[in-house]
Image (cartoon, rainbow, N blue to C red; front, top):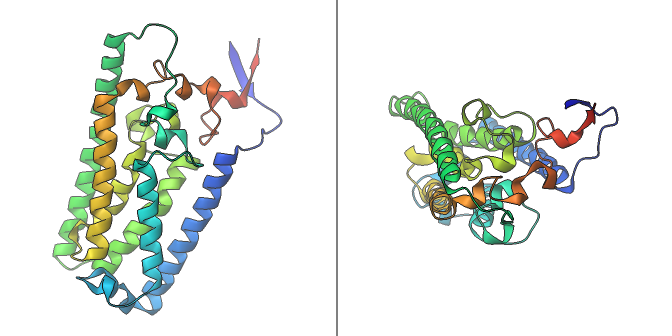
Length: 254
């Protein structure tokens, strides 16, 4: 069967509209941080040591937003969060009616995990480069923070517009993505080199989120594959986050 693009653009889902609003908010945070970097670099001292507890600043609000976002990835709350992020939880699992082919499931998990750790190695190489630049004082704490904020924006660009990691992962869309909840670990990894409660607490929480995700892949692999979890099938998709990849937005032609 062939497919052609639907002439009438289907309306975006509520989840997609919410994520677009989040992207706008992240861009605003990025612009604010860029402005602070340009006019008041002393404000970034909050990242050093225990300065986090000495006085209040707008960066405390950003810290709280980031912490809340990570908390929602490890607590099974039935809020407006994408299925791709919540598929580790039992309440998002819709088992198939047929008997599960355990061998194929194992092959799928092994294959996607190999691809995932290719991404991990590439990202680690990037962080090592940042670490070398930091050690030679070519970049400082404030620049590492700005890199983190840029990653924060790019995270939703990957979800809503285009994701370079799909070239390695070969996944159909974000809903089925093996590394969906790696986002915060990747985002806060530049903070590894900054010594202070602000940075270390964010990095530590992102590691917790990553460990929970990886443990669920190990213990409940059936929740991560569309051939064992009906909720992940394109026909059952309600998120429509990756509209440019979704076949539901194409009309069949004989």
